[in-house]
Image (tube, rainbow, N blue to C red; front, side, top):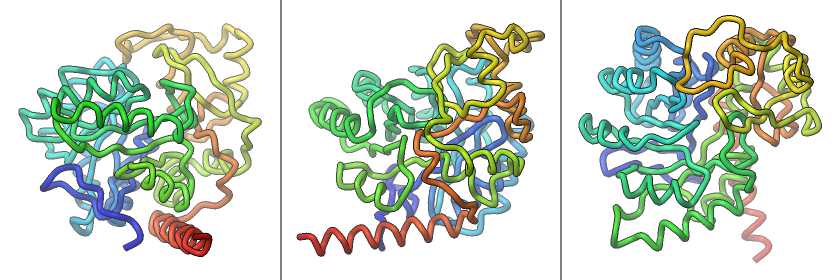
Length: 336
């Protein structure tokens, strides 16, 4: 095998060390998550923006589509969401394999995970939070760099961030749980990138943008076409209403927001977030993106968007990543 198994714990393993990013709203759905799990990775349903009943339906649909036990099924949920706890409990009652959360940090969720015996993996971007997560009982951590799309917690590159956090966690051994897996996220686009992350000591990677450009991703074709034609120069950082920087493609909506156009301000509010600046309705903007509304949608994207130029099936994506990884190892061996 080119890639090693991703071991979350003694009983929970994915035969491929690839986690599909949990992208809301309704970008990472049951069909995509199941396809990734069927290829041996960790398929992720984005819970943010769903009702409890919708989340139950998504999990059941994914389980029905999963053909084997080679991969795992997870949810991703924003801590910033007001219904964070309710959705976590809902997913756990449905027997989700693991819970991933980001856009803020919860201490309480680790106790909930222990009650249900379900692993919790936070998304962190600092040494401080990585150590706290390990101390609280995280089953692993996703280290997300400034090259990622969506909400960001740092401007550091993944190649700088991983060694820093890995060394810090190593220094805690003997005090906290040992050897939790570190998963790299942000800027990873190829099998060669995955090999580099594994050599840095990671147990796996998380990829989001790559899986938007899959046949199984249930976003409008306009969304995917926008990704394919976008370049690095088309990306900007904005202030998200949740209080974090976020990377997105510069669309008409984003240009209006950046210019201070009052038309983007919240006109009606369902109070979906714990705290919101109300500079614009992020849930509506992401929903418009999922529908392919290029004028009103907010399209989050990783920093290496221009490296993608084709829409593939999830199986083809996995095959391509393994082929690229194999080629990278051959080149490396030849240079020694």
